[in-house]
Amino acid sequence: MAPERMQGAEYSVKSDVWSLGTTVLELALGRHPFGFQQTSIFEMMHYISTSEKLSILDPTKYEKNLCSFVDGCLAKDPNTRPTPNALLAHPFVLSHSDLYYKNTEKLTLLRNWLNSLIL
View 1 (cartoon, rainbow, N blue to C red):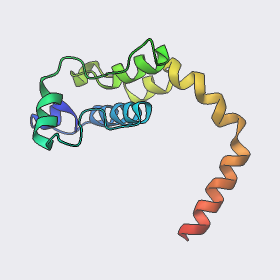
View 2 (cartoon, one colour; view 1 turned 90 degrees about the vertical axis):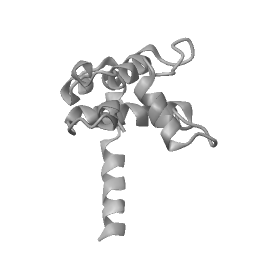
View 3 (spheres, one colour; view 1 turned 120 degrees about the horizontal axis):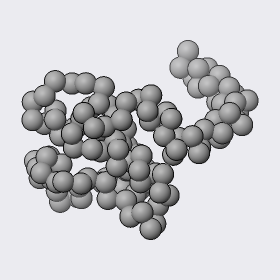
């Protein structure tokens, strides 16, 4: 949950940008980024609310553009978080967008298969 939501602020699309950042961070780390087995939800919420910087990716171990993407999404002030359109133009997304365009046939097959399971 975005820090501003924990403090009672209204939902905004910037809250979703926060959630995207936490999801990408968790995928990069391979574990929950803000908590451990012994951490209570209240301790985690306190950590998120009080920490100055929440991205814990080491730029010497992770791609610079990935770190920048996550840092932007996890900005404490929602007004400084990028918009969804800005994220689509971020170097991290652009550097990997060719994977989508090169695999459209495979993605169509996957989409059709998933639809056949659902319908």
